[in-house]
Image (cartoon, rainbow over all chains, first blue to last red):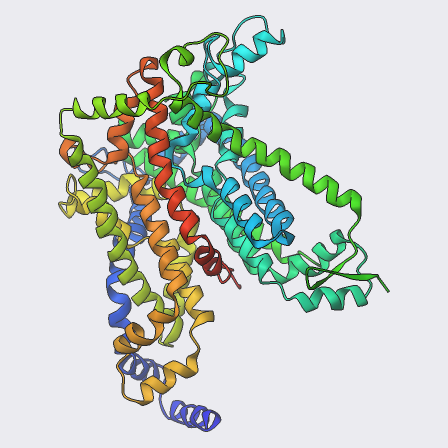
Length: 315
Length: 290
């Protein structure tokens, strides 16, 4: 029956030009367009248009007050060749992203994998413990209290007591310490959506594959992981990677809350902060849009690299 | 041929004891790292004044008291805009944003997952690509658009963008792909049911875990929303923002600040405890296939 109707459609399509056929299909499915319309309108207005607008504005000197003038590539040239703070921000962002992205990704996966064989009740408790920091809003500010710059801060007091330091360190106000500490805090909040996705993916791996694998000579849990588990959950690995990249490039908020804005000597200044600086405070919208476009390009590039890497898993 | 043994009714490979021990140790260490700051913030919120100022400071509270929570409520009553207004703002935006999102996103997800129409795939791919972008990148241009739409400094500036939250649509579409069989929809269509009716009466009841997940994610985002660049009138600002203002009053308010943090985090954590199994079920189909 189904085959017959497919044949019928194929014949019908042959009689029409491609354009006529599309038009007919569109008319037949008018209900579908109606159903996606409200969502797509909002998505376009608040996601697609802002992105396109950023690209257009990045070639102008728009400042919210005067009519924008086209300036060609001037913003881009200034950004890359005349803005030292941007280069610092780029370096910091890359350090953050290169450490936080992969480490949080691996941590999410390993924890999900370790708890996969536990009983459901224990598994759900462990899941809660690891996931809680990611959903608890601004709870990460507690790190600022733990690492208080004063000797009354718990970390300073403990280190002083143990004789490891002779005077209190200023931690989040110390250019040497602010980056590593922010990275630790970022990792602490990073077991989020991808973590849950991995837990679910591992639960969904077909058990009989493991038995078949054992028969085929899989010897230990690492081989099992590489040859069976990882290949069967590639879609989750891909989704998790995108989530990890997005959050590792976009967590300026943690730094601002703990280290202030701008951070000491720009030591933890990221591209996100640079964008906020020019867009939200100096109203140089043209220039800030240029920063946004560069950030888009970096994110897309990172996603393409990761896609390539994941497609190699299990081979 | 490798040795097989059974553990809890399922066949697993022989595991080395060394590996088991190593994994347990690693997991415990990571668990301690995750849980200690949480314990500290709860302990801080229960410390009486003299313990907050004790030197050397103690990690755990020894004589717990609820005074910090009382202080917090006193501070709340002192605020210029009545505190109930902030709570009302957060509740209003959370509820309106979440339910609008659930309805619009699931309707679009149904059409994208279950109806084949020209352009559907391209639209879904575009939405999926936008998962890569953090919304703060477009904050400035969104501001321009919202001011053109006269939405700045109204509740709409928070509510309407929340309707278009992309992760929700993505998860719903993926879940519908796997949880709603085409045959059931086909027979409903043969019976003459409209697409809208099929969506509402047949598909939606089958994807309960997904809509719970959508509600939780959207609610979490809106509940945790602090100061927004789109709102500047004090009477429209969120609960989270107001709490932040109270606790930003310097070190004198450390106790009240910890109490506020505990109150704010209790809500999403409780919600997650109740809905965990549904969220995990939804995540089972979150994978990206190509």
